Each structure stands twice: as C-alpha cells, then as structure tokens.
Length: 155
Image 1 (cartoon, one colour):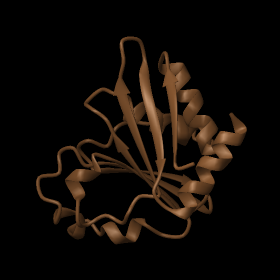
Image 2: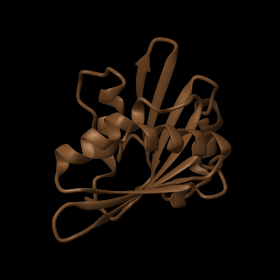
Image 3: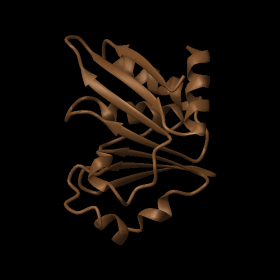
Image 4: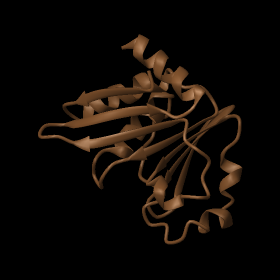
C-alpha cells in the first residue's frame, strides 16, 4: 500500500483526517502538499499542527515562506513556496537547517523549490470535487509507507 484515498465533505472532515494522520507520524518527516489555490493545503496543515497540541492560529506563511511551531523536543515547519521567485532563494534562507531529526516539514507548492528540497516521505494531493475535497496520500519512502500503514489501521 503506497497510496490512500479519502473524501472530505467539509472542512471539519479534512481537519479530522489531518488529526488522525498526526498521530501516525514518524519523525523526521517531509510532506509535500499539492493542490490548487484554496484547495485546503493550509487547512490540512492546521489539522496536523493542532492535532499535535498547538492551540494558537495556524496561518499560511505565503509572505514569510516558513512558519515554525515548537513542541519542546520536536519542531514543525510549515512552508508555503507559492511566492518564491527563484528556488535558489531557499539556499539563502538556510533551507537545509530545517530538515533535522526532530522536525516535520510540511511544504506547500514544493515544485517552486525543485532542486533545493529533500525528497518527500509523503505527498498529499487535495482536489476539488462538487461537494468537499478528494485527498490522496502517497508514500514516497519506507518511512512514509509505515505512516500510511498506521493510518490505514487506525481508520
């Protein structure tokens, strides 16, 4: 099993799926988020971050490129590369420093950072449907496969 597919009728269903996923994560992990503008990438990220225990707002880092969340001995870094004009800018911001053993890195618009990002462990695609969204979660590494197996058994 390398891909799981889900349907989320509304925002709450998407947040619930994200919270289930957060309990299956292994660290470190790199997650690529794909979807059109407004598809729900930041909403899904919010579900993960809040599922891990963050009680504040989770906003899109469209202008800052990265939003950090501190969980004591673990970190979550939420990247939004939509406005990145040149992937080489990632080198100047010290992109390699974010991908450490205690970090979960969630990256929206990873194609904008092509060549400068590590490979994904999971790729999440969110697509519009008439009502709600279709989500597919694809494992791209052994670690990603273990996460999907845990999620499948917790469904």
